[in-house]
Amino acid sequence: MINLPDVIPSIIYDDTNSYSSLFKSSNKELPNITGKALYNVKTMNTRFNKEEFLMPVLYSVAKKICIAQRFALEEGNCLKIYETYRPYTTQMSIANSLRELANSDNEVKYGINSLGWSESWFIAQGLSNHQRGIAIDTSLVKITNSKLKYFGDYYYIDVTGYDEYKMPTQMHELSRAATTYAYGISNKNKDTLKRTPFAKTMNTEAKILQKYCMDAGLSPLASEWWHFEDLETKNNTKNNYSTGRYYITECYSK
Image (cartoon, rainbow, N blue to C red; front, side):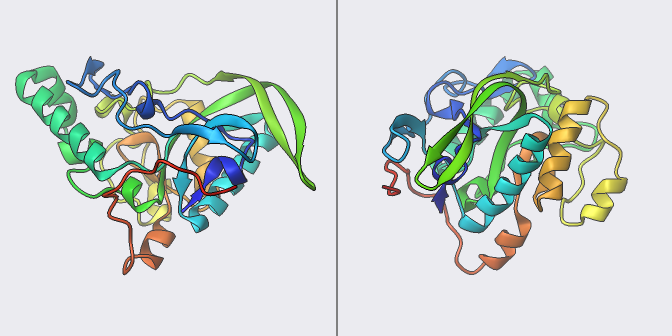
């Protein structure tokens, strides 16, 4: 994997799960998850001489994210990435907490287990593509202020001011309110996805974000407007994939 802030510094990075998790379901807090630091990935980035999050993905995925960011920048927008790699233990803690909440709250249970949807659509019950290093959770912002910065012989856009677009829900809302499509559908066939009706909650800004990512070669998830993944890389690494049973604590890009 490669650390995204080192190679695409124009993106805004905000790994909320590393300091105060946003995960909710039907706008209700998940026990021992919401508001908690689930791991720590904030560290000093010596390349850019500032504190930054460690946000790793597989190298081939980073190239597609770069293309999506270029599409956004061309229209005065910018990706804001909330999570890339997620440790397996964190994945299971979220899944167990959601199940616990659903078992005691009928509104939460109905929000994830009804109208053709099920709990596993909203949080993987085992290994997810976040552990494989091929998935990102991202929103979209409008750039209000920026400047050019140089690193060696290269320049990049440093976003110093922005307004985050209003999206269908808050990031990491695990319920039908956050679905991308009107019903659950596999993301393996992009032509089929293009013919599938959007969920009524999908707004213009969320559709623009999806277009940037899909045009760059990433695939959306039917149950989460913010989640995009690289299925081509998943196939290419199927015989040697990450299990996510580790924490990332140090950046080696010096």
